[in-house]
Structures are given as C-alpha cells and as structure tokens.
Length: 92
Image (cartoon, rainbow, N blue to C red; front, side, top):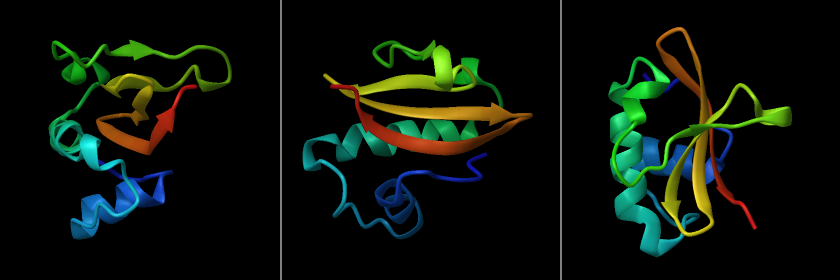
C-alpha cells in the first residue's frame, strides 16, 4: 500500500487524477506503476519486465527504482508491507 509521496505531482495525480506536474508522455506508465505499487507488499512485487527494478546504493540505499522512460525513474522504499517516499526523478 502507498503511504507517502515525496513528489507533489505524483501525489496530486494519485489522489485527484491531476497530471499537470508530470511529463505528458509518462502518464500511462506512471499510472501502471502506481497501481502495481499500491498492490505491492514487497519490493520484488515490482519486478515486471520493462520496469528495470533495482535497489539503489549510497545515500539512497534503502530505496528501489523502476524505469518510467529513458532517464526518468520512480523511486520508493518499503517499510513492512507499505511503500513510502515515492518520488519521480530525472536521473540526468
């Protein structure tokens, strides 16, 4: 279950369906990722072909990442069976 967001645009999209602060070409994939993340109870539940699931290192070592498109990723961390601090990033 999704508990918290870091990215305000993702939160608005999740809560209200307003995608104004997201890249228009990413909306469909973001919707799929958030739907799957809502149902996930472990990071491995996001291991879907094309998502490129991997655990991050360094300062973000507690976070997992899935690919939205090219440089864009959604990252999140799990505490128990819940997803926290979901963010939408351009890696470059």
